[in-house]
Length: 300
Image (tube, rainbow, N blue to C red; front, side):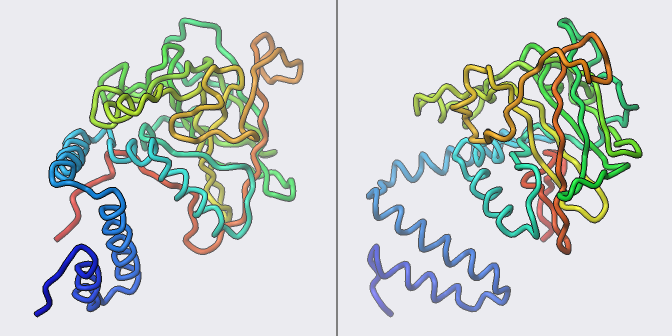
């Protein structure tokens, strides 16, 4: 038996894990152990700091519900979701429109609405129009593509924050027409703070960060034979457009609403955005994240 120190314990741990039959699990856990042990050595982690971290992660887990995924939020504010998203995009057969983060507020089961409908039940500000075309990377229209959208209201709240979890608002699903076109009505969403009432919010405050996300509309598009597109459109005049607390903004996704004579709904300010869908590889998805309600305890 070998006496272990802060360095040799790493090799001993890796050796004991060496019988892992799943090669991918073995690769991931070996790398995780090496990096975690190296991190502890680099910062000279103390027992009290270690217990603080365990307490924090316990709080994060307890904050998770069917409508709130605090661990996704933690991944987002640490930039890890953006890293996973970028790595995932590099594996795609091809890339179309720039992707962005799914975020912690996506929900399955929104109503399918006719083109031109509003996703806002009771708007208190003038509506705007979002319209455009969904095509493949060569510009061929994609009819019957499913366009799912969700956003905050004009006060900066998602439906799960403004109402009870049974009430869906500020979200809807649309199908493109025979020419791949879509359009719907909404309101300009207000930029908002991530939830600051939980452990992740307290961490962000301790770091002196503002915790704000710029005004944006989430969009998830699926079309047969094409890679799922998870993205968002960001309004460029928002004060936090250059300092998104979850690192989701790309220049190609920045938009402005304006008077537009080509808008399918005259009289309202409009945003036109055309989406390009890449070809799909086998079992390929662009989704990094999930509806919080889909997270269930792992089967034993």
